[in-house]
Image 1 (cartoon, helix red, strand yellow):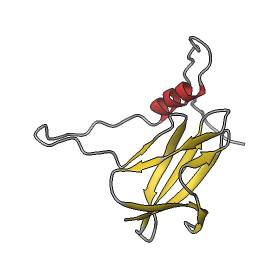
Image 2 (tube, helix red, strand yellow):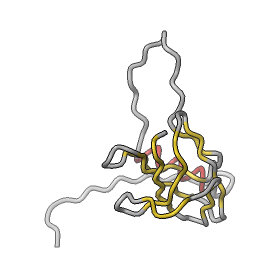
Image 3 (spheres, one colour):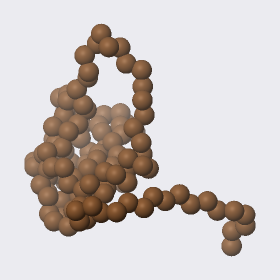
Image 4 (cartoon, one colour):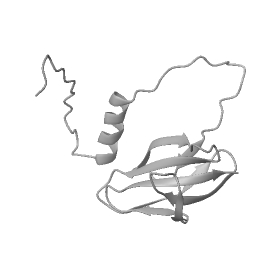
Length: 129
């Protein structure tokens, strides 16, 4: 039981040209997690991204430093109905990726490139270089 009013927000979008899971995932995340504008100095060059992925069907759902400050935890999500292989390209020196558990432990080497089966989510621990 829950008392009071409950509000819901939703958006309907037709699938022009058929359903495309990657495009719809990008659209949905753009609504739920919009980019934020920040002030920039036009005299300075645009910084390189921290991380880029080789496969558009795989997205980063979160990236954050570990509690010990020695690594990043990266959560990947395969948005497609097919197995996808993705390479991670870092904008700074980093160690090899390890599959991680919720306690941020490096459980086993992830290898490179990394394969994700359909709709798989995978958490990686990547040590700072």
